[in-house]
Image (tube, rainbow, N blue to C red):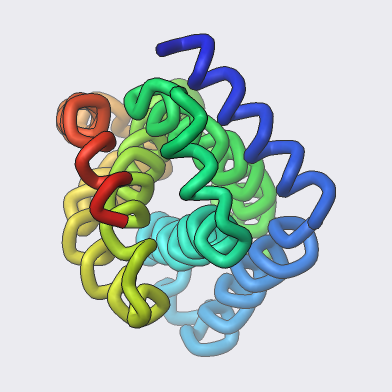
Length: 222
């Protein structure tokens, strides 16, 4: 399973590196979202500072939606999904490989957005340990949920519009928990954020377990 996961992980990352869709489209989109929030909210009123954590994760969530759509639409249009089903690879390995590639892309994006909120919003990145742990477990949860719902929507004609309807409500706990943990870290009270980080870890483990067990049937249905 882990060997198959490594193969899919490498394949997906090489595809993204060669196409540069993430670099040329997803990253500029996410940065633009941050810039638009900066214009929409009055920095002088303090609203922008108080909303920094939430705005960061909204930008990550929207970019994650684009990344998931990209990861599955390419395979559907080029027949790669059929090749994966016939390849003899373990479905759980395919799932874990996709989760890993999505997580790496999102982590790279979050580094860019983290620099953006410091630059545009004047955020003070205190509580670095909590910020890093929260980002890792939240990203893993987003990637796992994205791989599950991406597989569900992949074989449908309306996948481009159905995926947001499936994924966004499912990852609402990630948005809430990650925002609360980031707010605690930025406010200098990281002790208040660790329970939220733990809940994010549970969310990620649940979706990972579900994907490992059910990705085979989901892939066949797609």
